[in-house]
Length: 158
Image 1 (cartoon, rainbow, N blue to C red):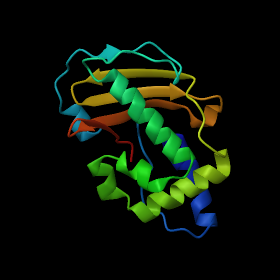
Image 2 (cartoon, helix red, strand yellow; image 1 turned 180 degrees about the horizontal axis):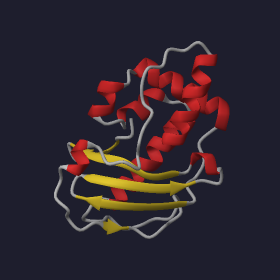
Image 3 (cartoon, rainbow, N blue to C red; image 1 turned 30 degrees about the vertical axis):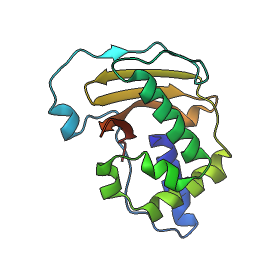
């Protein structure tokens, strides 16, 4: 969602909405990601969002479901749903009010939720880097950070 957030940050000042944070750096590991051991990562083959897959022990299916839920909520401007899928670290950096402004701008720019074309995840314990694409290249995400908190995957790009 880094590209969507960046684009939203350009639009929001024009709408006179407050915005003070969240220019993500998904391609750069944060301190939490770099302090973990170098456990082998699992890579899921690219799949369409609608294709069913079996429950996986490393959380790949749960991660894919969380990514789709976050993406849909983000693009449909459902801020409380998307914010619930935000990591605790990101919630500390971005208020629900600021986040709502970003989602409103994204909805104005992109319209509504759209299906993922591809999905690929590298999972290492409770951390993941997710790459997924859409028919609209501006929305594509590369190595977006996700973290598992209390057994649930949360978007961690803020």
